[in-house]
Image (tube, rainbow, N blue to C red; front, top):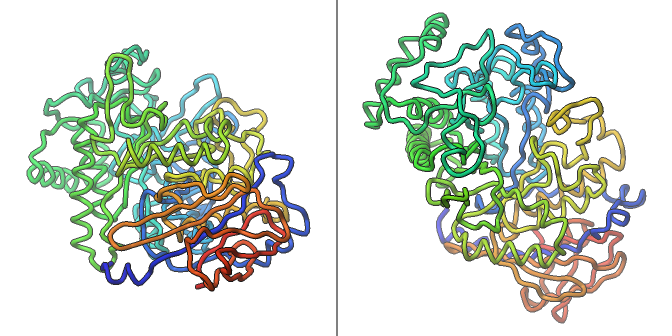
Length: 568
């Protein structure tokens, strides 16, 4: 986009009047549900894309939607499992269907992150929870193939193309740290590839990196620069599938071109970046960051950017914009208070300096519970605009492996949306947050309770529809206004609580005014000279049009939230 075009887009103003954080007051009345349903969700063309403002939807492919029942029963994964510990039928085609239906667009989603879909181990393991299959995608068997329970390579290709047509980016979840567990169907890889002991004890850097994450999860020797042969079990598999020569030829090309050594980590980097080079994946969500040497991540980031550039060069008609490849890291235990340093006890590491643009913020749920709106927003603004300039964090309220989510009982669903989507930084919506998918499932063990099937039938309930509309309105408003997640924050007044965000870069400007805790019914909002007199604004929550008069707008609606912006 040229600067001239960007200048033509100019200033937006938003006003959001907040949800009461008291869970008893936040649920909507029946009359509000009726009015809510009449409001069309904004679907305006996005003015500019900024990763720091992204609204990311994270889902487990197997638990989201079954789009192709023909792949439900494959690879003889038929042992009786613990509850929610086997494959349930969700697949890539199910994601495609929801993109085409506009579900993500109506939620204001910029990017979709789904679990790894490479081929998983074929056998099951029993860790005291009943038999468990690799439905979650984190037990790789072959990085070069898509697991048939999730779909096919062509399905993945179609998913990316359909997403891009809807202006949605794709974050591929990648694992470089370990293979899948060893089973009768899945032999251990050679000892020059993996270690099976010791298990990590987290008493310093080495005991968190050069070790197995858990028992029976062979750890890739990512520290090794030894050139190794490919595992015989992998070569035999490729030969049986009729693709041995093709795979070997591609490997020769990669190592000749890059000059990298044929070490275990670099083979996997080759396989992971192939998906970027061939399909145009927009970024990675990187698993188990602290369990791999930081220099390895820098190599992965460099090779992914090279692959992304190659894809753009060969597919100029499919390029969304000039945004670079994005690296999001899961550095377990990292919080925004750590800023740029993760402390192992005996060593501090700045992972942002080793390829990462963003780290998942495991601290957000605590801050959201303990801080009021201004303390929360100003804290995040200060750190992001000083210590983390040019970087960001991803905030979330629930996740696939966090046993202490912000709202485990789903009693603060409106507050969850308001805090998550209005806090500076990237927001992550975990599938079902928007329709209160239960996070407590009876008779499950461990993290299975967090990984239930998407509760689509709940949308037959009027209260669930109203909740979804709340998430949609905040999400689409955030989607259209980069200043919410990426802008600078400043309070205008404490009571009623009013603040604004401002984003300005490379000729693009976005100004947003947000207010919380104004009364329902008639309300007067001071504009504080952010927007000129006689400007016509639209409240995108109630559909009401207002005009700026004497530096104020007078609004009447039955809602305690107002989203004011320039009339389109």
